[in-house]
Length: 151
Image (cartoon, rainbow, N blue to C red):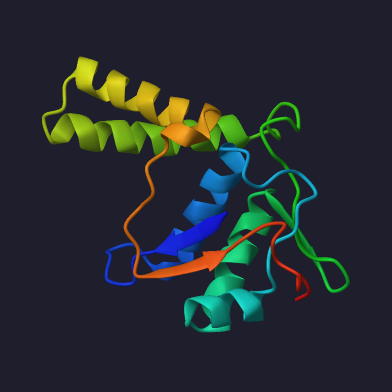
């Protein structure tokens, strides 16, 4: 899968990396046990500082989505088929969801539009062919195509 970033966007680069990896896991492009490139390799591929990639990987590790060690590198720890979420995940996720929905309402989006958008996004994770690629300034390959997965 290709990781795409918008270097001129408002979101910090580490957050974009984190978000694209979460989306790749949700859509099945990255599965439990799958490896990611090393922080240095991904940084070189994207032309960014490796500390930025390290920050994204560490965030994913703290969220329970990646497992990182010196020998095997960064591996996907959970995917959609890993069973129920860890304790505490749902409450924290609902807090973030509440804020996103509040933003939509504050901007005047009504119930039908918000619910249609939610269904559309959720469907994009269960049928990857319907997901539109994001515009990007930098791209890098993630997943099985990578040979070097050590940190």
